[in-house]
Length: 81
Image 1 (cartoon, helix red, strand yellow):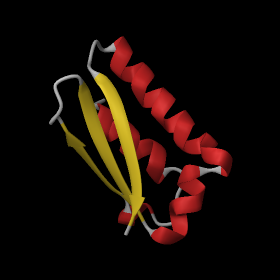
Image 2 (cartoon, rainbow, N blue to C red; image 1 turned 120 degrees about the vertical axis):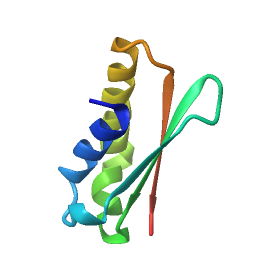
Image 3 (cartoon, rainbow, N blue to C red; image 1 turned 180 degrees about the horizontal axis):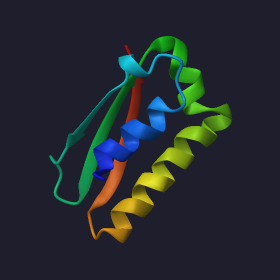
Image 4 (spheres, rainbow, N blue to C red; image 1 turned 135 degrees about the vertical axis):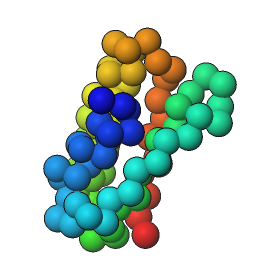
C-alpha cells in the first residue's frame, strides 16, 4: 500500500463524508515526500483532533510505514475546502 493510499484510508475512516476527501502526494523536495489532504470544512475538527492528537497519530503511522519501506521522510499537510 502506498503512503498516499494509507493516508487516504486513515482519513476516510474518520470523516462523515469520505467521498469529499482528496489526497495527493508530491515529491518536490529532495529529502521529503509531501502529502496534501483536503477534507470538508465540517470534518476538519475530527481529522485534527483535540490539540492535534489525531493529526499527529496519522503522521506517525504514515511516517512509520515510510520508514519500514525505506522511503523518504513524510510531511502531511491537512487543509479544508
